[in-house]
Length: 234
Image 1: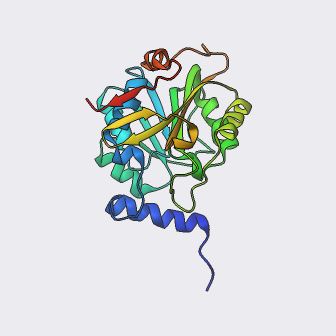
Image 2: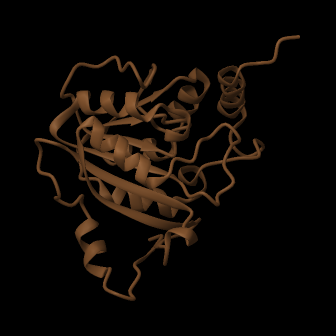
C-alpha cells in the first residue's frame, strides 16, 4: 500500500483540527493557547490596517484583529481550518497557496506569518508577500525556537535564515524579539536559548524602513542592559 505523502498527512491533520479543534490534537499554537500573546500582538499593530495572515489556521488572533477594526484576510490551504477561523470571527477567509497569492500588487499594509512558516518555502512566500504589500508595508513573522516540541512536519527555521530570506525578497529587517509565552504573560527571554518563540518584523524596501510598529518603541526603550520587558494580560 503506498505511503501517504507528507502533504496528504498534513492536510488530514489540519482537517481534524478544523473539525474537532486543537484540544485533542496533541499539538496547539501560542496564538490559540495564550490570550496574552494575542493581546501583545494586537498592541503592536496599528488600527484599521489591511492585513494578510498567511497560514491563518483556526484564526484566533485574526478574529480578534477583525473585531478591533482591521480588515483581515486569512489565507490557508485547509478549508476545514478556514471554516473554524470563520467561527472565531475571521470575516475574509481565502483558500489558496501562499506561493501563488490570488491578489494584485500593493494591496496590504501588513503580511503576517504567525507560527506558519514551518510548512512553507520561505523564498517563494516572502516574494509573494512583498508583491502584495504596499511600499511602506510590514512583514511580521513568529515561529518556534529550536527547543520547542512542534509538529513533526514543522520545520523550525533558524532566525538567521528567516532574515536572509526576507532580505532576498526585498525586506529590511527592523528587529527581532525572543519571547517566553504563557497563558497570561509574554516576556522577553533572557537569551535566545531560553525563548519559546521569536517575533521578527521587517519593512518592504522603498518604505519607511526602521520605524517601529505601534507599541514597539516602548518595548525597545525598556530594553536597557539587564532589563527585560514583561507583558501581562490586562
